[in-house]
Each structure stands twice: as C-alpha cells, then as structure tokens.
Picture 1 (cartoon, rainbow, N blue to C red):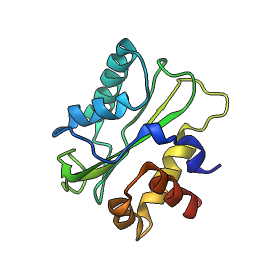
Picture 2: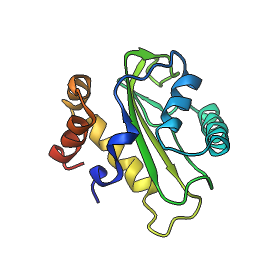
Picture 3: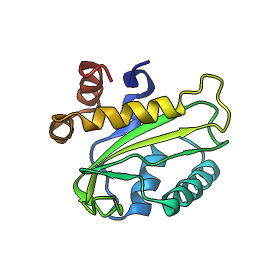
Picture 4: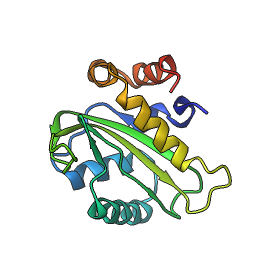
Length: 150
C-alpha cells in the first residue's frame, strides 16, 4: 500500500486561506467534494476529535482524522498554509502542513490506521517538511509521495 494511491490532485490545496483551526478544517473538508450537509457533519466530527486532543503532531504537521458515515471509502486531502496556524500542536508550534483522513466506521479493507501510520512515517523523514514547503503544484506533491514510496 502506498499513500500516493489515496491522493488526487483535486484534494490537494497548497494555499489554504483560513487563519484559524476551524477555517482550516472547513477548507480541508471542502476538498473532499461532499454535499453541504455532509461537510457540516464531518466538521462536527473533526471538532469533537480535536477536543479530545490536537492532531497537531509537531514540527508544523497536523493529521486531523475521524471515522464518519458521510464517506463510503477512505478519503484523504492535503493542505498547506505557509505562514502556519495555531493548531494547539503538541510542540506549541504553528502548523503549516495538514493531512486530512476520513474513513467510514466499518471499512472492509481496514486502511484507516495503516494510512494514518504511513502519513506519520512520511512526515517524520528529515527532508520532508522542507520539500513540502517547496512543492509548487499538486503534481509535485504527488511526485514527492511517489519518490518517498510513502
């Protein structure tokens, strides 16, 4: 299983506009192309998850994630906010890179946790944060995933 197979160009946004946690979450959810009601439900689910503890894992990275009936298969999105946002990350640093993961409550292929683990491993590689900062297009982001065989 490679991360590249889960990402599509239309679910990658390299210039997030939001200035706070809620706005960023809504923008990331918007990349999934869901209807308005589903987006609202998903936002509530992600907020609930964030209230349990921030998904900001440090070093400018956050991996907001949840399970929800609004999707029928695992969905992922990537967003970048160059100047960073206070996401209450564990290291108290602003977050620039956001990997959203949403999966149905029951998935036959059970990819939710493996994908979460793969993303965590990918972002911990020493050169990845610097490379994510330099990516200019969704295609370049996908190429980075392929190169790292993440």
